[in-house]
Image (cartoon, rainbow, N blue to C red; front, side, top):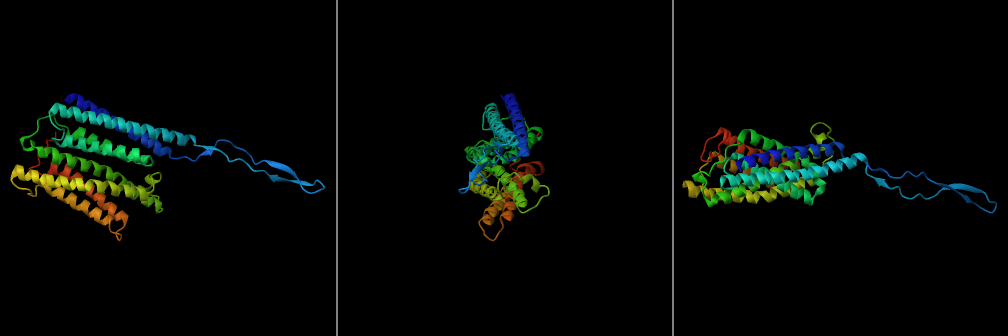
Length: 326
C-alpha cells in the first residue's frame, strides 16, 4: 500500500502539472473578441417622393448581425475546461494517495511533515474546486493554484518523503485527530487564500495603469474587487478554525507534557501566525486602512505559516520535532 500511495501521489503531481499547462494555454489565448457570424452590407432601397415620381435612396433597416466566439476564444474555453477536469482528477488521485498511505500506516496520514504537506495541499485543491464550482468566472486563478500545488508537492516528494511508520507514542491521543485535523484544514484554506491575495495585488496594479512585470500577468484576471472579497472570505472562514486548532494544541500539550504553553518553536510561530492573521482581519475591517495594505498582511501571514511548517522543522529543535525528514 505504501508503494501504491507513492505512485498515486506521483500521478497526482503529473495531473496538476498538465492542468497548470492547460490553464497557461487558456491564459495565453485569453478571451478573444467575438467575430461576425454573418456579414451583411447595408441595403439601399429606391423610394418614391412626391407626385412627379422623383425618388431617392435611403438605408433600409438591417437585421442585427449575429456573432460567434473567435477561434482563439473557443480554444481558450476548451483548454480551461480541460484544466478544471484535470485538477479534479489530480485531487482524486491525491486523495487516493492519502488514503492508501493511511491504510499502510494504520493511522490518519498526518504523522510527519511529508504527510502534513500532502494533506494541506489536498485541502487547498479541494477548496479550490468548490470555489470553481460556485464561481466559474474565477477559473483563471487555476493557473496560480496549480502552480502552488506542483511546487509544494514536488518539494515534498524530493525533500520530505519518509518511510511509513507507526504513530509516535507522544502523538497517540484523541487530541491528535482534533488538533491536527483542524490545523490541517485551516492551513489548506489559508493556502488557497494566498492565491487570490497575490492575484488581487497584481490586478489592482494593472487597473491603476501599471504595465510592468508582474502586473502584466493580471491583465486577464477577474476584477480586483472580486479577488479582494474572495481573499477576505477565505481568511474569515479559516481563522476561527485556526484559533480552535491552537487552543486544542494547548490543551493537548497540557495533557501530554504537563504545561499548556512553553514557547516551543512551533508554538511560538503558531502564535505569530495567529497574530498576523488577526491583524489582517482587523485591518480589513478598518476603513482607514487601504485594501492593498491589508492584503499584504494576509500574505505575510502565509509566509509565517510556511516558516512554521518548513523553517522550524529544518532549523530549530523542540518538542514538536517528531517529523523526520529524509
